[in-house]
Length: 406
Image (tube, rainbow, N blue to C red):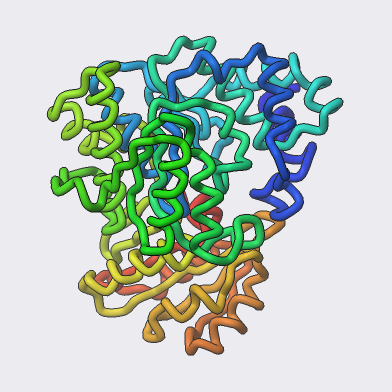
């Protein structure tokens, strides 16, 4: 199979949460452990930082990778989802895994995958770990796909575990209280391995302290302990918390003494994060006059901060290109959006995209009014057509909406 056929097979062979939702979630790590054994346990040969959290785990992972690259290390980076190409998920020093490696890995292991009905996540984690071991990386930043306790990545023993924050997302898998979601994420805290918490609430702090005490893990609360705010190429207001989380994690690595990381490495890592890692879709400006910003925030915790940041912008009229996936709690997110904006409703081009008509109807209940468009790009083109140069266009609601405008 060529690269396109290989990735199509990966996406379509078995349920994929990204496309289908609930049916892709596995109840335990049996399959991942089976695959790890088949691949000669690559996870045992990797030095890792494990990053979980409702929001900010992608940005935090990229910040950490960038700082370690600046310090001269060969850094593996595993993140999800991708925006345009599957290979964005697996990088070393900002360079994506080759199409050839993906094809060869799948071809070599396909019969094992099929015989054991492995999920997309399990195969992708196996691919990343196998690739990083073969390339002899110095350190790897491993982002959790969803949750933590049952995530396919949770077979590693990291140097440090990181939990960025807890908000309401994927509640049908992780529970519908902050405590239950925090408990799932705290599943990545391992015996005697330090853990960094980015942001917390009274409910989640208790969960983290209890788990860290059971595992005898040192616990660091970045929002309390880090006062520096280094400038960064990532401009979203929500990056302030992510930067603190990354700095605290670097401080733990420095204390451990395995990696030499200078203040200059941190400063340059933050400033050069986009060119070092290729991160996209975080308060990313696509145009000026009118100013166009896209952002992958897709739950109330993330959207609150982004929509607040829009309020600080100077503009004459606000245009919002909005699309979501069908498992979003619209009652939770729609009240956050401004009523005085022009809306362009659309459906991201994936099976679990929510029909734009349903979104429009629901939005109208919150006095958010606008027309329906048959694609994200048509909605965006129309917003451009109707905007004056002093207007502001925001594109968001879903990672998959942003993917279609990049």
